[in-house]
Length: 422
Image (cartoon, rainbow, N blue to C red; front, side):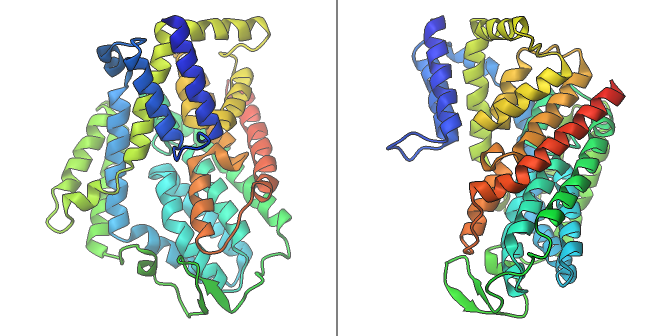
């Protein structure tokens, strides 16, 4: 059975790396789910073993935070914030800085994927209305959301996983990961300014492209509800922000994070105006399915002890997974092959969880790696796909032109921080 489990694992991760299967309309989540099904259907794992392989506290935390994010979306908070930044749009450099700062902070406290979903349509319309080239600003949004999310345990799915598995403290995680992330954000801003100096103006100054792909005359302002986003609701936004603030405060207490989060979600579900179906309809069941499936696929490998042999082989060739610099290099490479969540899930199974600083290193390096190429993070893909509906194309080379130097500089900052803080 060990050989069978190894084959299923290899085929699953190869499919995840490719992003699909030729001839089939299946994505990374579908591939991971098929891998999990194969583990159980072939007898490589018993159903009860598969159930035990899933880290339910992590799933519960992820689910609960999605409900909180849904409340803020339905309250119009994200689109309101994006529109407010538009006051600086006549000064492109200032606008870029404000956009990157706000998106980084929101990503650290909420979820970077949701921030990208909210900001991209508003940005595309506003920038094209103003006659500006959207690409540098969208790349700034992508990089900033990734860098900002690295600062906290709840900033992105891989950090949630690391924090839950190792039971890391919210405050200590923030103190260790926020400084290099803030410095990397400033560096990223400088890189984009340098690469796009004098190139802010777009080709079509008086026309824009709607989500349907039809051009229309320039309008004075962009209304978020034209892009399918709810109008701003002060009461619902305040309610969401109050619950978010209380939840973050609870994260500094000994109360388990998943318990605090599900209580917050429960309070929001008990609403007089927002239907339960509306809130739960915004939960990313796709991502939750991916997590559960990967837990099972990786669990099948761990059951037979095979990853331990790989770690031993790496150690024999000078790549000790528990050495911070080696861990960083492995995390960056693996994250850009199979994406950061599967990479983290695999690496956590073989790390010494008692070395807390290595867990911080893994969080930083796997998240920073998301900026290297388009496929490195889901946030990148969200922006690229949404921008395409507005006629804005961001190719692999254009992204890499910013992503490669930003990632290299971010990793240098991380290495310097490791040397200072170790």
